[in-house]
Image (cartoon, rainbow, N blue to C red):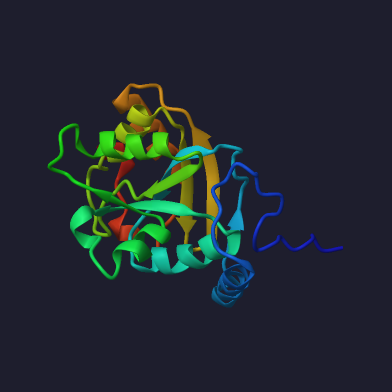
Length: 208
């Protein structure tokens, strides 16, 4: 007897997740996910506030794959964008889609600004790609950790694995406060996943 086929989207999502969308966007997202032939694996944690680290980020296809999953889950995922982009008529649209305007010249930097956003919202999941680029880099940016420290929130690790066509909710990591230790441990957990362009992935041994 063959093993039961794994569902495209896990069931039993936690109530703590910030939600958005409706039945139409959920159905459309699920349809696109099935057409692409991808599936989501792992369990989401019952956390109201998390910093989401998405990796390995090696292609524009990462977001083409991620967006229908977000729609199918009715997940409200927040993301960072420079404040200058929030102008009429796009300002309200970007905010409705989860955009957070940031001012890199402001006192305290981006980490303080996003931490304030966390404090102002009952539920908030902010997503960042630690590489900061689709090209190969020998060092990840530590902004997501600085935000997690400032907001006192855990880091949820979610990976793209293109060979198996999976988006994997890997684990929830609670930072120690030691940036070197935290970065090494997080990179180690991503080591088993492969992006669409693996030649662009960071060499974790060199970056640690």
